[in-house]
Amino acid sequence: MERKVGSGTATVEAEADGTFVLRVDGSLQSQVDLADPSRLGFEYVRRIGDVADALAPRRQPISVLHIGGAGLTLPRYVAATRPRSRQIVLEPDEDLTEFVREVLPLPKRAGIKVRGTSGRAGIGAVYEDSADLVIVDAFVREAVPANLVTTEFVAECARVLRPTGVLAHNLIDGSAGLGFVRRVAATVRAVLGEGVVLAERKVLRGKAFGNVVVVASAQAVPDLTDAGRRAQPPYDVLSLAELAGKAAPLTDAEGFASPAAPSGTFRK
Image (cartoon, rainbow, N blue to C red; front, side, top):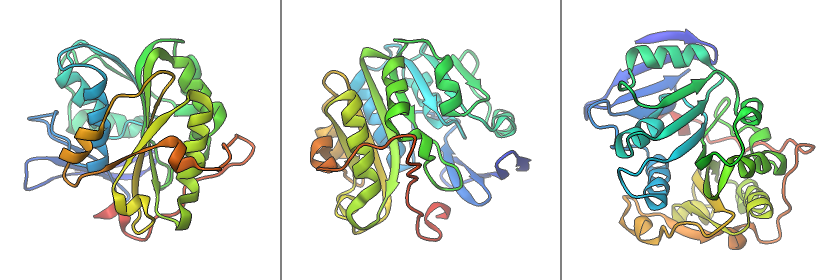
């Protein structure tokens, strides 16, 4: 299936393993298993699933705000593992959402509400102290938008989170010194306090380009050490303080976007 959407040409293709892969202009966006939404194929998505699993037991409803929607993989996961959860998704490409709903339909009474707005524009309308989990997984042309990694934006996430709520923010880096994720780690730490980052060791050592998931809370973050060891491939759990080092927090005035990925990174 193929359709022109606001962000480009969207395609959904069936894979040999029974899943469906969503691409926009050839760039991988989501992998969805309609028969088993609890199955998470992308490695970084599985890490965010681990955060949700550590935050609350299975079957216990939670309230989740998703910044970025695409194929709605994680909203489907939460709905399947924690029925009756309340979920809001901020996804600006309404044509893409319509296409996804048509070819990858959501389960009935999934409790997933999609708002056609960007994360930065839409988060201001989300009630204070309303979310157990805020998931930020948004890209524009294979880059993390600069306005979703600043002190001002993280402060909005903190406003929406409940006192024990958790932020899970998906980033990318692989540049020498990991300058981008270090500054985002410093930003999140300045607003929410201590937390951790989840990533493969080769990425944290600057030897490969990949995903880095920042996890933080105003209170203690869930212990993800065992989950990291069990994962395939395994991922390291590193403190925000260790990653941030002496990096300075980012602000709206800077416009510091994520580094460009090597050609083909998001097409495999």
